[in-house]
Length: 266
Image (cartoon, rainbow, N blue to C red; front, side):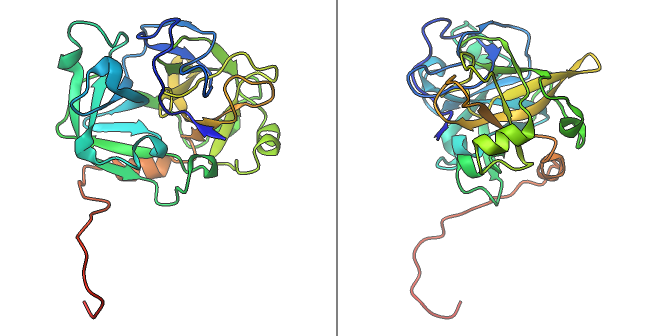
């Protein structure tokens, strides 16, 4: 099982924001999609002090104000001061990319996260300041359970774009035993379309009443675009309360290294 972490950008459309499904190792981005410029809430996570093009390692979505939504495995081994977020850019080489780049202040990860395939793969990033971009619309608590199998979804990354169908939850759980109601699968049984490393943390959306809403977060899968190995996404509907709790404006350090201390009463 592989999380969708970054490799070098895909040659087909290496620097353009794109939309599709899920994937993994040999290809480094969304597989068999087409280019897109229509997602203003899309975020690229970039290593501090690195060029945006070479330093981008994961995707994310802008929630509004100073908050970013992504996957835990993108950020759980990093410090906030090592991260930047580039918001509302479809071409990571465009001239004004630096004007869309912001420092991260805090990282909030789900406390029950163990690894990508154990689910609970959701994190919130708090920026150093509030910024003004179009935020993503999040799926409500009950949307996932009200969608039919085969519903067309769109996933974004820096490779290509194409729609993928929602997979029946029973099929998803039988394919991956760790998947419960906090995640879901999308993709084709025959494979061929998927997201991959570098797409991790990015949004997968569904059209609901004419408005696109983020239904999931690119999380993990077995290989990339392989037959009967669907992409797995954190279920935004399931985490609606958690997301609300973490975006109430209370800033804090979730973890802190306080040094080494001798054994004894403290």
